[in-house]
Amino acid sequence: MRVYAAFAALCVFIFHFSVPALAGETSTPAGPDWNKPYVGIAIGAGYGEADHTLGLGGSYFNIQDRAQLDPMGSRDQSEVMPAASVFAGINHQWGNLVLGLEGEFTYAPFEKKYDSGRTEYDSIGGVFFNLRSRVTSEWMASLRPRLGYAFGNSLAYITAGPALSKFSYRFHFDDDNLGGNTSTVNKEEFRLGWTAGIGCDYELENGWAIRTSYQHYEFYDIASSAPSFTNGAFQGDLKNSLDYKSDVFLLGILKTF
Image (cartoon, rainbow, N blue to C red; front, side):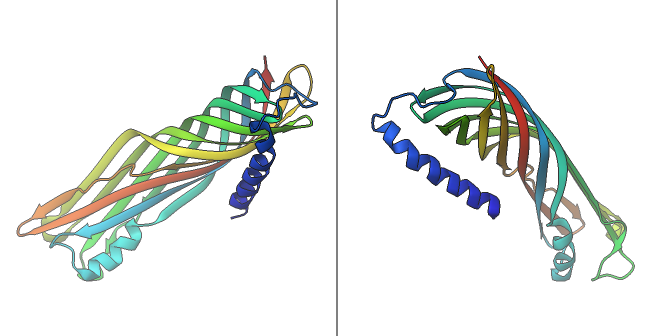
């Protein structure tokens, strides 16, 4: 919540001081000229969270089965991971107001596995099931407009735009009831999402600057599927869906040209 409060405060700050520039304040402020292209690199840390949803359907699973398996398949998995990025962009400056466009590629490897192990059904003694899943994502790429406010040697900005990532998702269910049943999902695909963030660049000398930034990413319906199995007169449906979100904090250096 503190991160989002800081984001909102910075938005208000930038827009408050940008209004005079939009109304015709075109004088160049004292300090660096941000009206130029740039490239940079950054390192830091990220927090990733995979949100699973498993809905059991069909005549195979009874109410007691759903109460037992749903919480095991519908859970949030999270981890902290290292992060690094390369970025490039261009700015256009009017007085204190700076508009820009930036592309960024961020490496932030996420991998989480879950294995229930051989677990006995609450509804049928002596009958066992196993539920396993695995989610991986290694990178995120984005192309974002930026709105900034220049003061002193600093440029504070907000940014948002589309994001792209590649996910690998595997889900497996099996049990030994009625001769055995199996259901498996194995997907690897690109997914579009969105990102928004805040940051601040501080110019040093000779066109070099340092940056601190925060980006939030979200991706939806990564592995929406409904595998099923049939055993005699019974059918079991396992409706899977997966969302992913990540927060990345970076410290970097950039060079303007």
